[in-house]
Structures are given as structure tokens and as C-alpha cells.
Length: 364
Image (cartoon, helix red, strand yellow):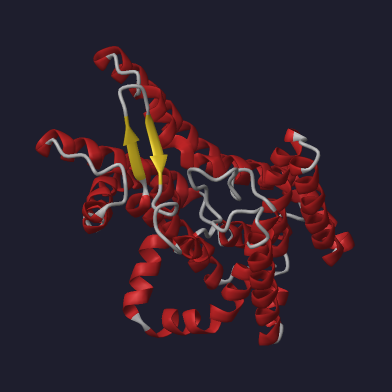
């Protein structure tokens, strides 16, 4: 019998991607020079803003729900083999991402050849930079059959091993200066969030105190780690810090994962009530869920277009520091990129709709 996924999982996936998109649109500071385009953010300039990253850096939630959907999909393929699972999951990620990279590389050559601008390739890389998470996600898809089999055999022990390995890798990275250990934690720490998603149905069926257990455990861990004078308080990169907790992820992201999984479990009943009773929530959820992947892929393209159109029309560029003008113009940098991204979403839907309709599945 085919298992069907929980609608709350679809909500969380869409919600987490939308939070990332809004963060990029509203809180990116662009530092422009003739040589390059560099991103920054207001966290290092604004007292206490690091605390918002504990809620707004929601990649742990995305990997957590990804683990559940992958386990569900793999369970539905168990009577066959892993190849069908891997073929479908990788194709859904690789085809649109590869097309986007190809388009922007071509545009880069055109811009570099036409304008002879030294900043061209730094701008192209910046537009494509959100794809980092798809690379990690794809690796997790590729190892998902092994991870799921480990889950069947060892269960909760796998989580303990991954937490311990993340800690050991941080020691190797920071104390013994082993650079490779930092990059290993991309897979170990995001793999932990992914592996934790295999327990989703058991966690939502557990008593509510389990959600509080995750929440308080993660919060205490995050407070302790980020106040010992070593790990930064922000869980996103901040210019001027010795390193970022996100790239590569550190033990602080393990604590963040526990905190956010706790919040996810505690919020489930309230969100499901809203989805069941509010037509506005239902309409918004259907649209966002149906467009979450192309919105994530194309939102920086829309932002780049908005910046170019506004500059050409008005000769205006946003300030390179979070002064009063920068803050007052934040609504513009939500609306303009949204309007510029929408045509790309329509085009994406027209291109992919025939294939998506053929491949429709409750575990897609």
C-alpha cells in the first residue's frame, strides 16, 4: 500500500524556502565595486539582530522534512530497488538547477564580452550561490538508501553517532586545524537533520513534552555554545567574524536543529488548524507549495533583474550599509524582486507542467 505524506510536511518545506527567499530579498546588502559584487547583511551592524537568525535560518527544518519525504518515498519503492528512487529524486533537482546554471553562465559571457566588466563573474556566482544547499541535498539523496537502511537497523543510535561525529569533526577542524573536517560536517550535520526526519511520524505521535524536550535542549545548547567566546552568536555568516556557523556548519547548527525541530513539533496542531479552517491559509499554502522549488531557484534571478531595472530607470542603487535609508527601503526590496520573479515562475510552470503532470506522485 502506498503511503501518503503529511500535509504539515509540505507546509514546512514551503515555509522554510519562503523564509530563505524573503531573507535574501530583504536583508542582503550589496557592496559594489568595479572589480566585484560582494554580499553582506545587517547582522554585524545591528545590535542583537543575531538572535533573529535562530528563527530565520531555517535550513535545518528543510533538511528535517526532506528526511521524512525521502524515507516515505523509499518505503514506497522498497518492492523494487533503489534505482527508481534515485533516478526520480535526482532528476527533479538536477534538471532545473543545471538549466539555471547554464543560462547564467551564458549571460555571464555575454555581459563580460559586451560591458567588459570585471564584476561579471562575481555577480553570476552571487546569483547562483543559493544552489549550495541543492548540492548538499543531492548528496543526501544519493546516500539516502544507505541512511534509511541504517535507520532500520540501528534506529536512534545513528543520531547519537552523527552528533558525536559532528563534535569530533569540530575538534579536528578548530583545535587540530584539519580543514577537511570542516567540509565533512556539511554532510554529517545536515545528514543529522535529514536522519532526524526519518523519525517524523513517531515524533508527531509522541507526547507534547517531546517537542519541549527538543526545544529546551536545543536552546540551552545554542546559548552555551554561542556564549563561550568561540562560536559566533549568529547562525549565518557575518562579515568580520572569524568563521561562519553555517559555512561549513558547526556544532552550533546541531543545537539549532534540535531547537527548530522542537518548534516544528510544538506548532503542528496550530498550523494544521489554520490549514483546515482558513481559506486564506489554504490558498496561500497551495500556491507556495506548488511553486516552492522554482521560487527558490529563481528568486535571486528576479532580484538581479529588479536591481538592474531600478538602476537603469532611476540610476539608484541601495546603500552599501544598513543606514536609515536602507531600512526604510526594505519594503521596496520585497516587492520589486517578487514582481520581477513572478514572470520566471510562470515560464517555469509552462515548461515543466507536462512532465510534472506525468510524474505526479504523493511522495514527490
